[in-house]
Image 1 (cartoon, rainbow over the protein chains, first blue to last red):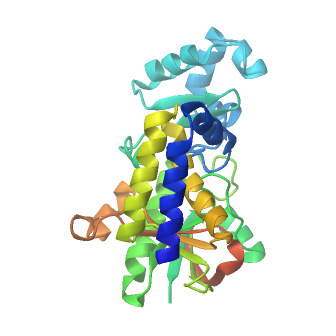
Image 2 (image 1 turned 60 degrees about the vertical axis):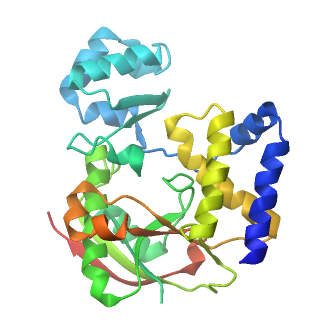
Length: 111
Length: 182
């Protein structure tokens, strides 16, 4: 245990020696461990919410085809509007991060 | 002996029983396979309910949208590890204190989104592995209980339930599976 705690002290010391830019680069370079949450791509999300799919594709026809041409904030606000919940977040062009719609709003973030 | 339970849909459950677990690159406490933890058989009912609660949460979230059978399966395991070398208990008070310092330094000095908070956990373990020149097969942490399972765990007294994250699936020994119908 003492070796482990000493190693942790050294790790924390090393963080302090880094510039903010170096620390940001270290953070950005670490690519695993991010919560993927829904792990649901746009199409599977839409297929499980047929009415929403109809509304969104009517308003943003390129969404289903190209997945990239609509600004994420617009999509996100549209989804908030549909479900009257601000707990859905668009993560990237291929996936949606959304939380359980059954009173688990805070769980996904807390966990 | 350290044990764990993992809830998932039947399609995944069947694959796991046949081929074993495969660590995910993402998770609330970094990469790995996640298990609700216990060491006494008297607590098996609690981890069973936690596993079912997790499955319900994941199902509602859409995780199993492509699965053929979305009913619930719970897999019970034990961990074949050398606790002195393969195991890191991030919840032990001294290590957890260091983690909080580490976490605060990263949060305070980087542009970190909500989705990336869990990455700090993974970085912490990686940095420690690098410093000690070893790899931890199993991490102990705590994760809030899914709401549907809260009533089964005395969280007000014990805190969030134990969770084991197997970063190396070779340490996971499957004991048995249980199919749970909706």
